[in-house]
Amino acid sequence: MSDARAPRYGRILLKISGEALLGDRQYGVDPGFCAFIARQVADVHGLGVQVAIVVGGGNIFRGMAAAAKGMDRATGDYIGMLATAMNALALQDAIEKAGVATRVMSAIAMNEVAEPYIRRRAVRHLEKGRVVIFAAGTGNPYFTTDTAAALRAVEIGAEVILKATKVDGVYDADPIKDPQAHRHDHLSYADVLNGRLQVLDATAVSLCMENDLPIVVFDLNTPDNIRRVALGETVGTRIDGGDTA
Image 1: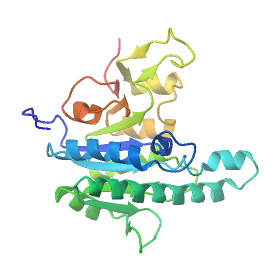
Image 2 (image 1 turned 30 degrees about the horizontal axis):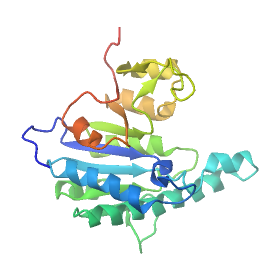
Image 3 (image 1 turned 90 degrees about the horizontal axis):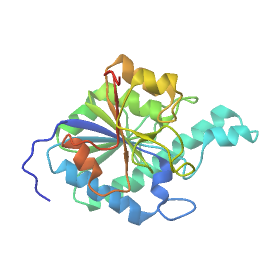
Image 4 (image 1 turned 180 degrees about the vertical axis):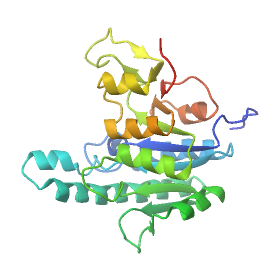
């Protein structure tokens, strides 16, 4: 798909939840939905945008849920990190089938399947036109993949975080349960933190606020949304340091 418009962002970080890879399945990875994501990534990559991705692991294992049932929290989080690596490899396969060179970089050493995360090497991959998928979160328990996304985005100099969700932005109530729920077009970091809005965890939002890194929350299921955000169109909800009054 050709587009004469210049992208608004030269380097983006896409945060995808593990649950997004379920597609229509109850568990695991849906190759068809991975291919759907891969086509969108290849599309925006074709605009000249450098793309990094952080993927969660909730479709396979969630550390907090396991901890609630008695497992040691740190152990559960490490298992979750391994789940993100599985998802990263599935996405890598799909994106490379879409014709884009891809590298998986892991915060936990697993040299046979992924490169170790080294910031300068990650930036170099992006500069060479490769999509970089960051696996294993931050490499530490007690930190979510949302926080990993914010951390990696700041480290590599991304200009925006694209937070992919199942709904078309941030609402003042659950839009599935409340048909009167209102969608916000724009929020400040303070709005999200003070309102305890379940967008990203507070650590991730605080890190973005400290580094003036905007977040766009959008519906992953709508085709071309990643392209539209990259081009600067108004999609979903934008979170930044601007005044919402």
